[in-house]
Image (tube, rainbow, N blue to C red; front, side, top):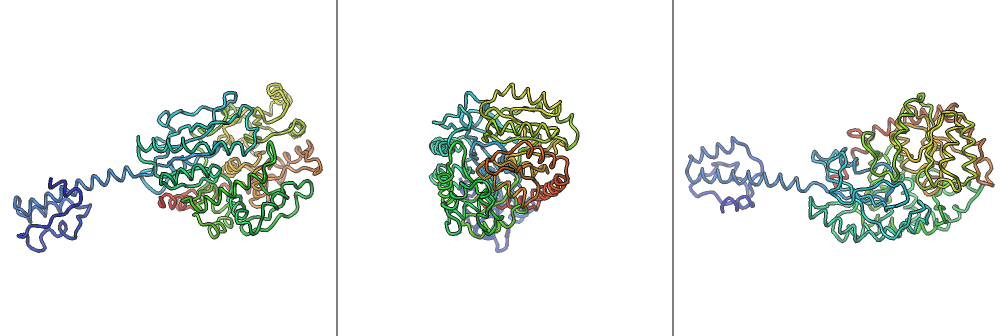
Length: 551
């Protein structure tokens, strides 16, 4: 009974016959120290004359300290961070591995349970996810992946649906997310933090607030896009009406200056993120984004951005001054080359790696328009003819659904046949492994942020063909700010069609010309700066450590 009282932190006073100064390390202060030495324990026993009241008291106190120290170690183990990561269902670099395997803040890494809310699509080649939290683990034993059901959405035709319809569907996840967090907490270490994508702010922030856990916002785009969103939310320097006007610009009007904003490159009308996919949703999408940012800036614990300080220094400096919520630049997070991508939507064709092994160094142009872009049949034919005329080696991700009104199988056979063995066409690629391959010398990309960051991390120069959303802004930074890419330009602004001659010319420029040599050298230097930021005492290392400490 006495030992139990002592273990709980109760300290009895020493016997009256203990002279002042005896066993001072054990009796000093009102609370016992957690840590003590064996010599201290022996000394206390000897001074207390063995089995005397003083000796017995000293030994009892020492045993109690042992119990308390053991209990403290167990409690510390139980208190390690258990983060639930909820992505928007997009493929690309996974921050869960970055937080877990590269966590510099502790020798006991966080337990991270990753939920990827990708809706099941029966007719698509969508990779299956484990149905329960215990069904599978990644090579990092503390990272688990679960699937959160998404109801009321039909992706039988791929991603050809209004974007806001997709976002509204995600509002339904709140109840299932709450149940998941409560279940994880009952059957393991309690969930201590929710890390969720900016695009699903409303349901996830509500759940985090209800359960009393901090929410960290995962911002999947560049810091420049975030700062532009902040300016638009404030409404003082840029308005929604002005953004709407910019989105309707065509031809030469797209090159007119939109505005000059502190922390951002000079923006032209064509650089402003627009949301013309199936329908034009620019106004409604930006309205939703500004409301989401208001919630994040006032209620979130922090925001993590998949970028790094040296890449967007002035942007991060401006964000730190004008935002209420702390901003952490902890990028780039990219998936390990040694493990299979767990967030890729389609089955990856790894046979392309063997084909790359047979190609000359830096000779292959890798081509991918991402998961949502759509090309007209006319534009596809112009691109194909320009590509073949360039006579370069190429690896082309021609996913089903990229082009309207073509027969996929016959098109692939035609391309391979007409390339004289220089080309390979696949449905989906292990992109990180492709971009890190020594045979790849360039990347023709839609400039999505995942693709952009992976290209920078691997030192691969880019040909920029942006489609929508943040891609035009990313392309502007790639070409004019970081100088690691070239524009795929449209010579006939009135039609918007990029013709085969323009395509052939820019491909040759990147793969053979002096312009390509220049941006390739810049890409190599930027890769080195990217690597430095993740080393010990690098900017991303320090910011990640500070983030974990804040929890």
